[in-house]
Amino acid sequence: MRKVGKNSVAFDNVFLHSWGTSCGPKEKEGPIGTYFDVSFNDLYCDEKTWETAEMNLMRTALVEAIRKGNLSISEVELAVGGDLNNQIAVSNYLMNDFPIPFIGIYGACSTAVLSLINASTFIDSGYGKYIACMTSSHNSTSERQFRYPTEYGGQRPPSITTTVTGSGVGILTNKKTEIRISKATIGCVTSSGENDANDMGRTMAPAASMTLKQHLEDFKISPDEYDLIVTGDLSLYGSKVFKDILKEYKIDVENNYQDCGLMIYDLQNQDVIAGGSGCGCASLVMYGYICSLLRSKKLKKVLVIATGALLNPVMVAQGKEIPSIAHAVCLEGVSE
Image (cartoon, rainbow, N blue to C red; front, top):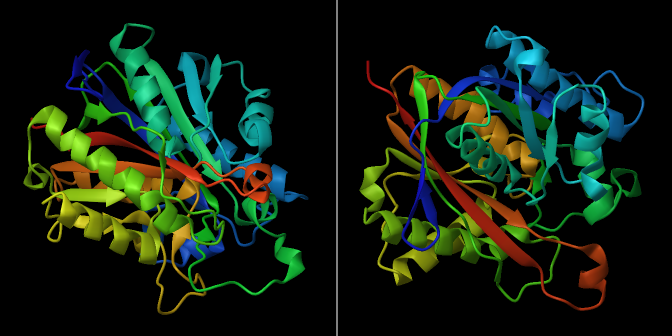
């Protein structure tokens, strides 16, 4: 492991051992729903409250990742992760049920990649052989924390995104597998000047573009290095702003760019307004869809840029801007 350039790091010996995903009904019905391991028929996910429903999503994804990796719980030496709830409550309460050392982190919707970066540093430093990266989001827990409860029935503006109900868990190892975590770029907190909690896609676009620009500069590469570059959850409007900013930087991603928020839902046939968002958005697309394509050799190298709107409702009520951040990680297939 070594630092590269200003904001980046190259990993020497970090691989993805296994992964697990779980989702709600709308995500299962989306264009890539067949790639998710477990789905639930309603937002309660066999529980009585939204919060325990989200806990069950994360528990299911974690257990699935352990099962698919032919591991026991005792073999997982560390877990790194978080969610969108106050004091990352879902992750903390869930890990009370597992005898695994736990590092709770918060990067809003960027947590999917932030957990990968943190866990990769532990793997490369020799901490252990198996470390879990985990995150989740739930439409109803997120909506009532950051905007309005779904029961409120408020009208949604065209710019609003739909928080994904789902969880993704990856287990990293230092033993060679089919997928390698090769490099990462840590983002800086950025402000777009926006304070609209109903338009977080455009709020996060500057952070995503700055992180990609820094990544390319640090590693002295072009966007063509990647078969696919995906942002976490800029969705319909944010992804357009992202590409416009990159044009100002003279960076062309027209041929290999997609956004997880646009991939997970069918905007024409599902009532999701501007697309998907939330911690579960990038993690489901990354672990459920992208890793499957890497394993099957349909993709060789992918850059995932998870974006996070660092929204605090109290600060916004005081007239403050919404800061944002984006972190990037490279996943690449390993040749025989």
